[in-house]
Image (cartoon, rainbow, N blue to C red; front, side, top):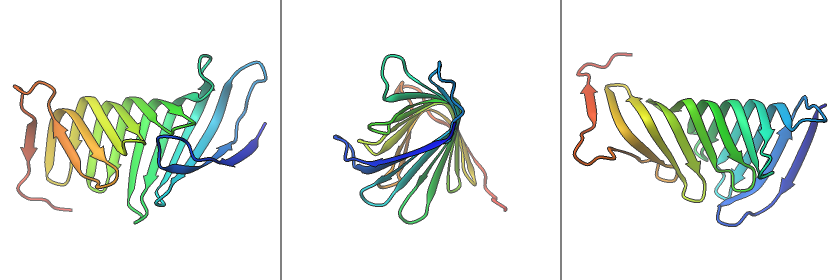
Length: 178
């Protein structure tokens, strides 16, 4: 069974004004499981959000929540820069677009590469919060930290430790070659 569904809405507490849902799914009529699902959203300033999953199921407790497996997401900014996110699983809210990525999460943005267990994409705050076993690398830097926040508007990255008595562990390379 394959179908496409599109609608426009302006949800409360978020700057996203459009939600296009493309579901190409193989569903079992006695199950809430779908395969090869895709959701697309565009905010009011032109940034686009795309999330795909090989498998998804609608929550029994809240029909606005989709539990996804083998997940790929992309945030494309109006200047064509992209943040790519991959994870083993995610919980996606179809109303406010918040997405909670879990297990083997990888985030790529320009030369930044971050691996962690958890990444929470909160649209109303325009932030991605990463935590649990963070490994960050860029062209000449490798570090370990407790949490990282990415501001989706300014694209600034904050890296910090939960315990203020602990320090971020960083290694810097002097020579960078491509």
